[in-house]
Image 1: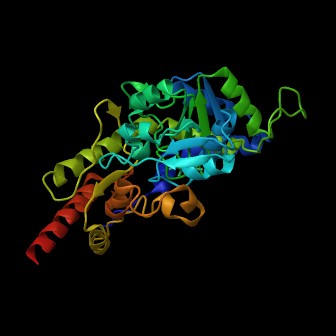
Image 2: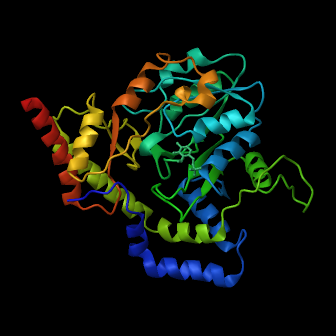
Amino acid sequence: MRVPFYDIKAQYDELAPQMDAAVHQVISSGGYVMGPNHAGIEREIADLHEMKHGIALNSGTDALRILMDAAGIGHGDEVITTAFTFVASVETIVQTGAKPVFVDIDPHTFNIDAAKIQAAITPRTKAILPIHLFGQMAEAEKIAEIACANNLVVLEDAAQALACTRHGKPAGHYGIGAGFSFYVTKNLGAAGDGGMIVTNSDEIAEACRSIRVHGMGRERYYYDHLGYTSRLHEVQAAVLRVKLTKLAAWNARRAELAAIYNDVLAGSSVQLPTILEGNNCTWHQYSIRTSRRDELQAFLKTKEVDSMIYYPVPIHFHEPYKAFGHGAGSLPETELAAKEILNLPIHPHLSDAQVRHAAESILAFADQTAAV
Ligand SMILES: Cc1ncc(COP(=O)(O)O)c(C=O)c1O
């Protein structure tokens, strides 16, 4: 039985009539730039996160970059984050001219270890960028407390944390704003790229809206900021609005599949995901750990079970970022997690049987290796 890691087409198939109508409506309208769907998805995502403003953009990467620009982060500043992430979290810090400062992760959640932040603060620290990985939030209330005590800004990388909450508060509420990604494979994915900033600050929202369109102010062809061209395409906004109607059901299905994995794998030798108390997890990934990761991945392949490694190489080991880190051994939990993590299929269009097959294949691997 094949267990694919993603099945994006199944999302389309479930919603084909609505999706076709929405795309056709945009294409036939001639209104392609910042139309009613652009405004609609901004309102709907902001409402979902109980935030005042949503600023739709063409990627999650731009969401982080524009949020940092709006917060005034630049040359001479330091931004505390982790090296266990998708490159965009760090790439955008470097692009502003600021220096990323890496703090190690909690080995159970893969998110920043809040207890290690204070030691990384220097007189140049301007911001903390927690990354809410895999569908659960970092210990945002502790991070906000440290930030407040040290007069720092918190920006949340919520690319993988749409609809996540911590102690009942959605991502975005613990800092000056959050950036989401609507990349195809996210829990809410566009038919291509997309992203959004949410914020409660009128000032930050106004700056983000301006930076999104070349830094243009309220008056056309008058510029207040250095900007980009980063609007969300109207077709993507329309696709996202259709898929948003299914997000709660799809996330609920992910939770059911996670429960199957937890059930079948309980007591096995692999480390199962830890969800912190107070977190509502949306299961963007189901991540296990084992010291025999590469062997397990090869074995799963023979059983037609796909798996992925998020992330195989910590950011401080990559050439453009080496200068910002302190080499091998400097982030022991990050470095070990990169060697041990394995992400299993958990998209909402999997059947119970497929997930049971994936989980039982892991048990079979353990039995087989125990017998050797
Ligand atoms: C943690 C994290 N940050 C930032 C991004 C960037 O988002 P995008 O791919 O939409 O530019 C992603 C997306 O893959 C991500 O997973």
